[in-house]
Amino acid sequence: MHTSHAGIDVRLPLVQDADLRDKIVLVRVDHNVVKNGVVRDPYRIDATIGTLYSIVERGGRLILMSHIGRPRDKKTGKILASHATSVRTVVEYIERKLHTRFVVPDLPADPERGIREIDTSINWHIRDLKKGRIGGIYLPNTRWFEGEEAVGEKRGRLAVQLAGLADVFVNDAFGSWQPHASTFDITKHLPSYAGYLMQRELANLTRILEPERPFVAVVAGAKFDTKIGPLAEIYKKVDHLVLGGVIYNTFLCARYGVSIKGVSASDIEAARALVEQDRTAKKIVELPLIVESDTIEGRVEGKYRVRDIRELKSGDELGYVLDVDPASFELPVVAKIMSSAQTIFVNAVMGLTPHFYEGSAALDHTIDRNTEAQKFYGGGDTLQEFKNLSPGLYLAAMDDARYYFFTGGGTVLKAIEEGSPYGLGPVDALIRSQGKVRRSESPTP
Image (cartoon, rainbow, N blue to C red):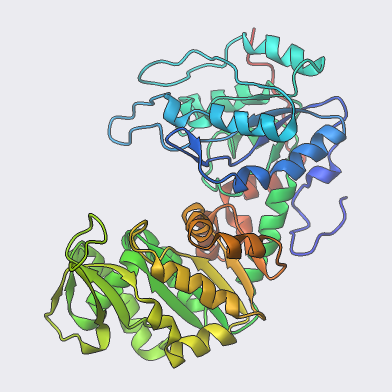
């Protein structure tokens, strides 16, 4: 029985309780940080280093796997294994960081169906791994594998093949909450444990689900309908809710009977329930000064202006609303709510970057001035913009115990929607795997 850890369900199997000596350890990470073949922000990679070091220090040999981007075309089902979604850029970063060599197996990929099998060629690399000739193996993008997001036999076969490579499975991929072959099915075949990053994320998630009050959440997004479920649950839990991006535009349309370019009628209809709910509860903090633009092509002089929503009349038609004006955060009612919060959760970019960024920068600095609150940031885009817009503040926050940066904003929203992090498929699979493992046979002849 493992020892208790604050904020962690005692049923969750932990990597520190695993026997790793002379074992091949298959680690699912979330290193999905590549855009156009470049590592944009290594934070998600760096956050897993502690787990990797611990495994090696205790005698384990590493095989890593992660998804990168979306190589599968949703309409056609074709899987394109291209440089843009390759793990090789990540591997180059890890090799520089750890001063060791990782091998990416060159597995044959069908031009339309991706990698269909893990063939016998990988055995040579595993032999080198066991003999210490290489520091680790990094499998190709998990979403290049035909079985990763499939259903039925293909998915089950991939899980068995993956399990056949190793002795132990460790899930450190908090950002990958979808139950796929490499995060979910694999636990049926190997002794399975939560890595240190996963544990830390779950413990901090508990602090959002059981917050010190007042609790303020800031949520933005490009479409309202994708956030309906999480927003409804966040609304129940918070004392105050700040909206940004197209979500806020949609709320304004439904609330004031105006139209804003780029906001669909179906999204406005979907937002009406939230508007009605807020007429009574009054939790939504309206940021009254918004930035209207005639174009989304950039910040064109003479083609954008600040508008005050308090002056809007039903039937008014606005251009594109691309940001919140920083002065909104200085208004007494907004400033008081932000400064008195004890817990703040941010999963938001307020404006259409890179040209409309002032709202996001003002939000980050407003939050930072509250020195008492616990501040939780989630989501790759949220962190990337924080780092881009306020690099000094970002670096200071990294070393500030009052800040915590999640590696997966979508995972946080999903857990809030479900009311518990332990209902997430991959986490639940770790818990249910205990005592039920069937050691799989090697997938290679």
